[in-house]
Image (cartoon, rainbow over all chains, first blue to last red):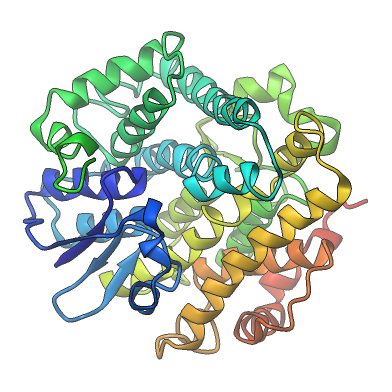
Length: 214
Length: 214
């Protein structure tokens, strides 16, 4: 398996955590430099027409895209440790937390979206940062309320073992910190983040520890 | 089960299609009027802290949120007909197509995002429509390339039966039509859409056929 990766991509960061949790070797990696536009090079588009990272190339040549689809694939093909609970309602809860980040927060704060704001729309640096902070706060406030009030929340987003929800949470918090967002209102989110970061599979997946980190 | 629904919400539309495909009764429905802001009412926020539709309230009172999490739940609890293929790589392909819509297109064209553009950022009507068209085209171009070149594409996004990918595709195309986007470049997407719309579970889920349609 070969991972097409970029140290600062939150979506790639999710897959790195999942690979580490599963103990799957990630020695084969290609780094796609998003700020240099390498994701729009013809050879990368031939591999992944969406022009996004991550992508996971299987040994038979098939290429998987979209971080959550890749992680579900890893969970189905490498069942231990499970990244989803066993019961259907629990699985729905974990997926909803993950999607609350992957569909409601992250897409609005992608590099390409921020570039459109300042480029095509001529937004100022202040307006761009206001946009970033607004969508982070809307998303995190909802998530904090949801996790704080629910008995199913444990040391991690769901009980006592990390799941796909934590795998999405940690990169999004890391991203928010890079934009200097005040995270003090989100005591449940940051408590769970600390529990995750104490685990080597999470810590080792951090952007700063990647070979392509700047 | 009770579905919290809004006729024009693409995410709710996905769940309506899935319920119809599974033959699960949807007679219990509550309509949450997004344009009137009913999703921010205290009683709805108590039910779904994310303040989004759809939500699915189970008979035991548990509430599921996020359309894709709800659909995966329905697929796990009502296995026939399956909405995902059996093989792990096929499942990853279908989920990636669904997420290519749910994470890359739909979040940027949500009502609340368009309102932020024209409200907080003071974008003109023309800039707002340009934004909408830009993200639709970026997403659909990638999806068209991906589906057109892949032998796994059949009458539907994946083979000869509808999956979660088609369930996401049809509402997004319907949304794009409402914004008068030229869909003629997307011959594979619209061919698949026509195959879906020929099936009553898709046709009956359309916004115009809902009791709350305006």
